[in-house]
Length: 324
Image 1 (cartoon, rainbow, N blue to C red):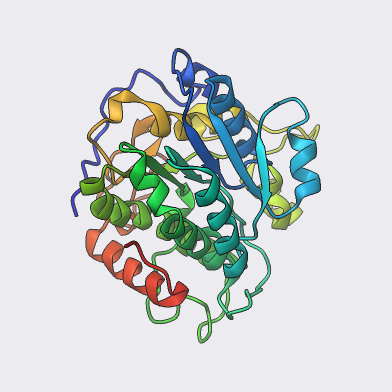
Image 2 (cartoon, helix red, strand yellow):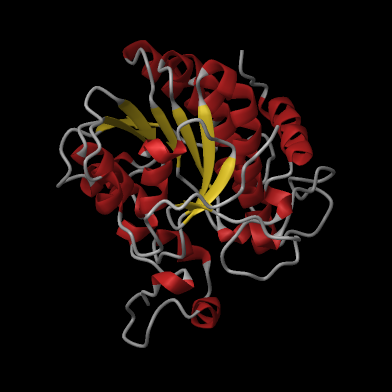
């Protein structure tokens, strides 16, 4: 597995919006799945894809909320799926495969951040399960359609939060160590980035490339588990209760937050590339160590090919799924 973790001069930047990135792109006839597409930056991601003519499929755990989210975006295909329920993932994938011959883009966008300790039915910690394992299983199940697209891309939503933790291969589900919601979040975001490294290595011979994305700091429903003290310390909401927007300091609007996903999914600048971590509509620079405190860049723990391969094997074992 190799990566080219070096900026390429995309011409876009931290303040670029999804609409600006997708301008001039024609996605007519393309099929795209966006998990978590009915909230936060997911809605703006779907909006951009639809504006370019794509058929967009959105799996949803809360169908009522999903229908409400798309009242002004016609033509979105909704169906039920719960990332914490393996059987639900399999059923959804089967329905997609039955109705969609080729899947051109899969955006693994859904996620949860720093909740109290909870587990799925298998006993797996909820952030590792929803953010990583559920998407791993979904990608494996949808692989036949991705392979048939001949040029498909898979986008994994990671985060600057990968700075908080690597993968604890001995205890990924906090069965022994004390649960820390932010360490668990960091582990899951590192897993998202490593997933893209491993998937790209596997998929490139079959025409499927993978990228991981840091969308930026965006005030969405994702912060629902943060205490008021944590919100105040993060300096993300002003005294009037409005989100603070400063793209150069990682504080973005949802439209700006969706831009890097759209860029990774559609840009011809990334043809022939994959397995890289992107931010601000650009391939992020590699940082020298896991202790680096720079706001822009990716730490070695999130791009290490050995860790990526090890995580892939662990994910196959924990989910019972693999790519044929």
